[in-house]
Length: 317
Image (tube, rainbow, N blue to C red; front, side):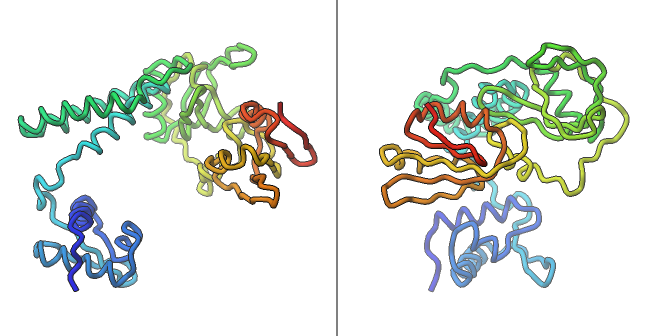
């Protein structure tokens, strides 16, 4: 029986065009949520329509399929939804203070639209304007820190090059300026409100967070910096609630029945566990540090949430 869902087959063909290594049966199963047999039918359908599809061997005898570059031509032209997503990403980056990334995305999107035929370019411009007006990402009010674009460019260059930096940095709380601080930059952490650099500090011989707005000078050095081989950024971040670093503890929040349904729609922590109680309340459990930021966040729930961190319990309100 032939697989007849044309939209999925076109999407699979685009995947095969866009992958240098190729797409395996397991990749198709995962991407489309289908059984192995259905994945094989999808591959066969693409192969019947496009005999130029290449098969290449992988590790452990696994096979991959891909198209030679340029095979699909205009079939891989960008859609309005993809353009909108790109502009949304640029707006979010600009709102959060990452002006360099926002401008790079905007230049990329302009180049993509310039490749359209003139008639489609006019249609896309009108549709895109309507979508962005409805989206509202760029117009959402809210405070953000002012970060010099040159600071972000130098940090990004240092991270990509894998080198140490020498910096002048002003502490947020005390206002004290530390000169010629030697750091091994690992990642810039962007989010709502405050933005940080995660870096290894030579002075403290440990990983530390530095407010991006506090950097007044950054120079790249010749010395190579290599992050620890066993370091995993997502695991490191999961030990905290928000950005604050402290010893992780067992955390338990009990949302009362009147707010339990709303609370259940949130992901408070990537490793959270949820439990509905008989009375209709919701328990949220996770392991993390950052009690101060938890308290700030939970203020919005008032007396409708009970908190237990380690041996500490009570209401927030």
